[in-house]
Image (spheres, helix red, strand yellow):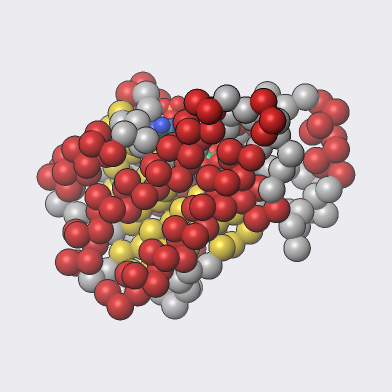
Length: 248
Ligand code: NDP
């Protein structure tokens, strides 16, 4: 199976930390050059420095994915810096949990704007260049919460379910040009996003995972690498769950 990404350029959003950082490093280890993007300059630079140390080319960008004008400008700069983008990973995401009944409008808007509109902004901004080059792979990081919902996460679940609809529509629109679009739905992965959870809730979650452990960012990165490689050329519009068997 060929997982080599030599000669490819990948744009990974939210690659300053967590799952995005792991995906960026996995792609770089497979030979890709990486546009590392996150909110903060410091975090994206840290990942870019790690990749440069691996001998690949990496440039950090600090952009709010919810800001469509900023995304358009960033994509223009990235295309000027790297000349092309072959692989787009829409990974940047946030949570602002709370019961629906009391959820402030701002918490709803902010999560949808980041998790769902952010992916739309990047896919749209890169679509002309991808369609012209007649190749490319888009990977959207959704969540099992987008498949099954979760009390206290109506905004997050809606954003992640929306991302699945965006994935399937993109797959259908871009397929005739040889571009695939798939989603990965992680379960509970150990990152800053989940470190805040209280011990009793962690134990309850663990009881629901057949493989009896939380996931690591590398578990998700391995599947992203597969989907980004030529080994997955005949897969599009799919949602691959990486959750230790939580949802089946
Ligand atoms: P982290 O909180 O560890 O990292 C999130 C990354 O996204 C950071 O690099 C952050 O930037 C970036 N980011 C957040 N908001 C924006 C924004 N508006 N513009 C640009 N970048 C932004 O999260 P995870 O690694 O855990 O999660 C990554 C993805 O995986 C998310 O989409 C999440 O929903 C999804 N996921 C995670 C699961 C888990 O259990 N951890 C489970 C299922 C899905 P900065 O570093 O600058 O702050």
